[in-house]
Length: 391
Image 1 (tube, helix red, strand yellow):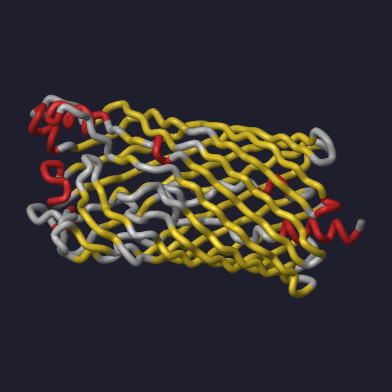
Image 2 (image 1 turned 120 degrees about the vertical axis):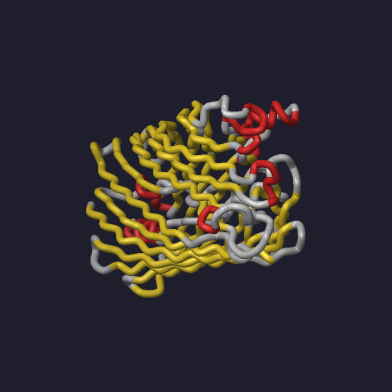
């Protein structure tokens, strides 16, 4: 029995990297809930640095230098047992985001306004707090559920010939809304098995959206409000995690994530009404063509009594080609390497990294025009985590 317990603990050691991505749509985190499955009292603090490199050409062949700014994210989690069959976990992450700025001489730069405001640029940030209660139906099966509180904010500026009459468009909002999470897990420690299936609901943000719309100035004159109620809904998702011990020092794991990004459409109210008046059809600011499937497969090896190393392969389908100029990549292939060092029986330090080769994509605006071509791009992520556990 001691041998099997050790095998199961090694499986748990595989999740040494916080799992940040530069993935389909606006996604920056796969929203894992691994802390819920830890034994006893558990806490972790994680940090990631994400550096994508995305370059291309506009429709006229002008060079577009790296548009994707590097950014940092954090994640935290605490977990405790409320009773032998009931556990509580609180998890913080930053699941959605974007940091894009066009520079140089190309169709995403306005020439008729001050330089400080001439760049197309986008910043999207999010914060999630997920609270989960897990209940053990028996020694193998657990069900869990709880609310997810989400803050979403965006600041968007469109400039240059790419956006024709709407060069000069501005959009910003900040809102907090609530969704929910539910799932089921199966564990069999004597075989080193842990499997979980988790569903996250979509979260609808109803808020005041601030817009400056050059087309509306033409269609409606000054007779429209720049502050109007609108909504944007972050998508639902499904995560499947599987892990098993192969022997006392080796374990195998797989993660699959599905997000229906093709359902995501953001219609700011004034942009929609002005394009409907001018074109007979309201246009969104942002939408995607395809759903995303992401897969990670890895193996972990305990190389020393206090050191475990894991390697993994990654694949992300992306959310379609052509892709919005907000993130003009079509998925990626990647590799990951991570290590976990046990300082003592309670304290652990983890370090990991990923390198990604992005799929080529045509850049598209919401009226369907192809406005750029982005090829041969890459990115990397480095992350660290400190965790504490006590039985």
